[in-house]
Length: 354
Image (cartoon, rainbow, N blue to C red; front, side, top):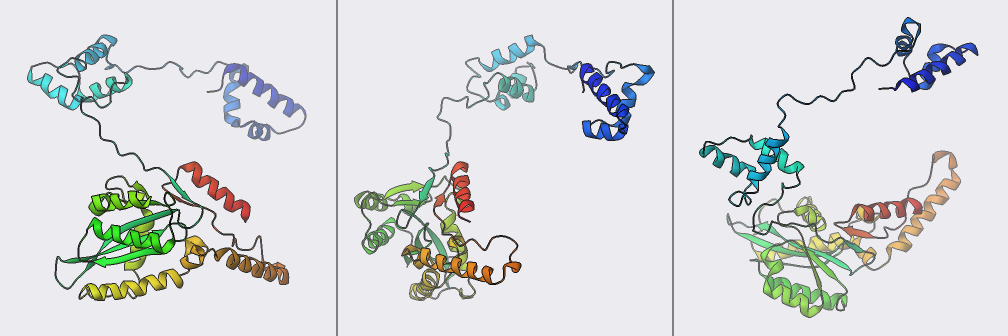
């Protein structure tokens, strides 16, 4: 709604434009006003105040201040202070009392800032895990366990898989016939020796499964100086790297169509997959180098060679390139459960590098 003084100013500007030889509809378009609106303002040869009402209407069934105070007072009685409106309203109805509907209770308490956890018990919390950032290999690991079918219905094998989120390299794995934190602890000890991990160098992220929080696993992590990180309960998105790796594993064309006959057969197949994944698979998230190359720090030279190749190709035929060449700059940092600012900073860094 345009105020009267502003309408008067717009009309004056249009009249000045008309005097200078401009058309009214062009002037109105420039000012963001429809020509018909300008005609309405000029009716009867004078500007009129806007006839539309500016009053704010209150619903006829709106609760009075006294009724709102009564709802708050009842909700704060000792017998009701720990209950939600969905519990309070039926109990009042059993007594033959009606103060307001359940939705009215919710609305009034919400506006009063009292619609929160109303019980003496501790409210359930599921905070997002702390964001983790890896700027190099052997800084942040992710691990999980997935099922492998066997020939016996209802009997499964269990694949333990540890990966470095920076390089995507599978740094440790094993297949067992059951889930046990002791098996996971053994694999972790082997990884520490193989990778030369020092205390407090690596953070290990996982979900809240039994083997992940078992006494043997937690004791091994404390002894080895591995810092723990856990997902929220029942939130698979908090451990996306392991979930994505399992999908890659089970959707490979080579994945057996028939269940595994025994643990030996499963280990044999997984061993071949790990070799392919680490040393042959060019991962799209790390600029199509292999996880082993990135883990060893070879990706910088490889990507620099690609960048030089593309620049030379552009120099030979510049007419075939509309803008820049493909961005072959290495991915500087990898985030796990990042904040929005972390994600934007990484994106800006990549844009500048391009």
